[in-house]
Image 1 (cartoon, rainbow, N blue to C red):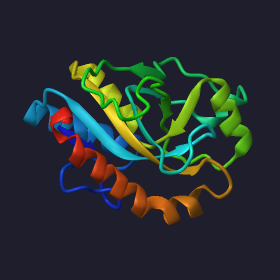
Image 2: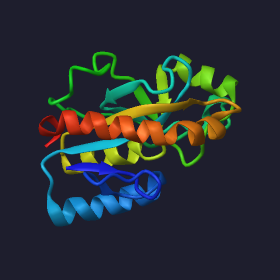
Image 3: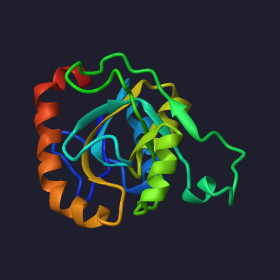
Image 4: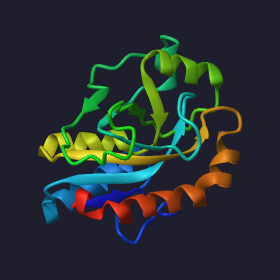
Length: 185
């Protein structure tokens, strides 16, 4: 089953699950219980902490939930904050060999210092939903992976660049999925 966040990031070929960590976890859990998909494939956009450039296409099965306060030792967590899910049908046309970690938070990073700190932790990208998508997949033992098109760097221009690049990024997602549809079903 192909899934996406929804609202301004919807696709005809994907089920919307909601924006952010909470909405996506609740809606995806409901879908999994009712429809029992055998695989999950999330498509969406992401910000780059610096090593990927706008319009790069990335496929990965790794996510984290690192809040920015964690970078400055202002908090800790007793729960799992990194997930890797098995998914065997990843397209060979993307950078899947690298399989970067996508960080998820309900907030968008706009600070270069924070981006560099996340890179030092080997976290490359930012998408608001992916950690909760993988967490639901892990709980229900469903193979899962995500395809992301980079819209922006996570810096002071993050929102402006996201807005400027979002439509083209959505087109690239649709083209990639259309070309590889059988791989993701």
